[in-house]
Image 1 (cartoon, rainbow, N blue to C red):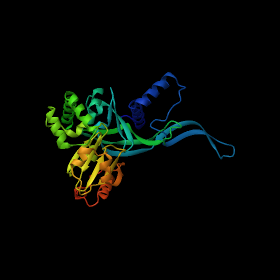
Image 2 (cartoon, rainbow, N blue to C red):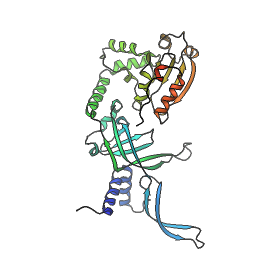
Image 3 (cartoon, rainbow, N blue to C red):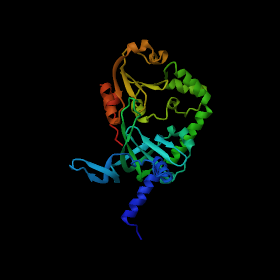
Image 4 (cartoon, rainbow, N blue to C red):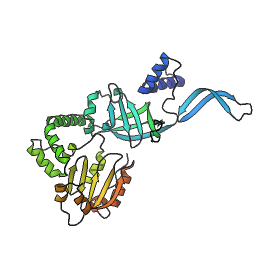
Length: 338
């Protein structure tokens, strides 16, 4: 016998409270002390149904009790990299800073068991989750006097979130673990290379030679030397596809194009810097002196600064405009929005 609509609503509401750690902790507090101030589940944006009475002149309504709160909901469907998850003991927090949304996942949703050790090598994962669900608007309040504005985020309802893993997920897990193990195995050699990168830009082929001399296998991906957990490979891959040479310098990537030099930190919230490349500039100028050396900076004409923003298609279009007339980027198709 199927349950009534009212019973299903109660079960879903309970599931959403238990599926959100902060709400669950607050619910436990209410059980221990009924005088604890109650919070609105999933933010404060929505419709409230209250009871009370109007003033004598009926110009003001005095609300005495909140009977119901229905949050605003929006259906979202997108792809989220697995590296954008914080793996906890029994749950995982998924955050997308670009879209300003977050949601919690239970291992049962993916039929995959994880532990907190995954956080050590999650930045090496390339797989993406296919997410489809209902999200409600919430406000992330800042402390008074912090000088930062309130930021509106969207939080996923656990009962209405469905996720799908790619077919090669297990293979991606094994690859990431193997790469992390290799980082540990050759940590001393990599530290030597990173020390060199602190003082000058080094071209990719030179780095490959250095790795070989330090007995690091030839199939080691050089770009991982400076890769950070929150880097987005989209910005790197779009610029490196037709670059004549790629340099690493500290945590930056320098792309030597046909008639421009592009400096990139492939991370949301950063910006791409485009410089014109003089005809008399040779490839060794970047590597021998270091890009930040004033002698090199004076020879490069600053073209523009392109903020990554929230729309990668807009970023790519602005890059093409900044590197105007450069067929290497202009010929690239616009990526599909996820």
